[in-house]
Image (cartoon, rainbow, N blue to C red; front, top):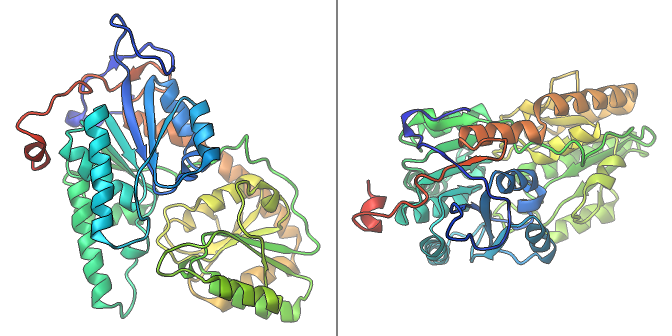
Length: 430
């Protein structure tokens, strides 16, 4: 079992089956872990298999997120997971709203006394980590799925942006102080965390190959070749390369009018969001087909020839690309950290220059003019997904680093009964 050196506690056996009943006086206490997300749907879309493994390992799992989603909440209940809604403005900058988030997390941790937390994305990491320190939660794990647009250094960026980044650095340091383990998806985020000293012990940071993808859920299929259908799935943000995708589609359709360009994804409150009016204009022009949003991307992936994500957002490893790879699709994406990890150039796809419409045009036209590459590269994508990005492999790495046995018998219980000494504020400043 992988360890974390001297920082790791001893671990005791938990031999209880997952249930919602209260343990009797003769039973060992169950260990509670709290997952914290900024989007409720991500709990089952991205973390379903991890949650199942945690429940199997004998944990009581709480899942916390801000939005009400009856379908997700029902699925979590079926898995034996308790869902708790928390107030959170995912993209807002109002500190008073964020203090409400922090207070809600503190109340839950004081009431339930969890043994561990595992937050992911910026606000859950920052406020989940700070709340856990205030409440002396002993095992604090952090899943950095991507540092996001705030850590992407732009040319000629404003003083406000630089100030916001400095503030985020300070908050990350406070949240992840004395963390047990921190997981990142790519080497650029690993380097940033170390260079900006977001953790006090760099040895606790390790890379994992993204969120992984369920290869049983995403089946390989034969891509259609005529017409050539390009598909981009992403939140509707400029940083995802959507304006470049539309501009490239406009150029290509002038020469190849049968080519199809599709866009799937939801509108977002992020500062770089694309408006509904812009999308409506593109559709009216006939440049792209907007497919709206969906809970199940599989039919849309099966209907496309090539998957495109020309993102210059600060990605971890894009889950949408992993799903396309598992479906057996050739990939066009940018030669940037996170994205480049998914492509062996010329084998399963093409890497393009970020923000370059001409580079994107060249890559897409290459598939139109040589359709045989679509199927060949699609098969290579599926093989790569099986070898590198299988969710079972990813979860084994996570659980080993967290020192949770994948045979479902051990969990971090020695410190789960830890009682804070000196008060919560004193514990948080150590």
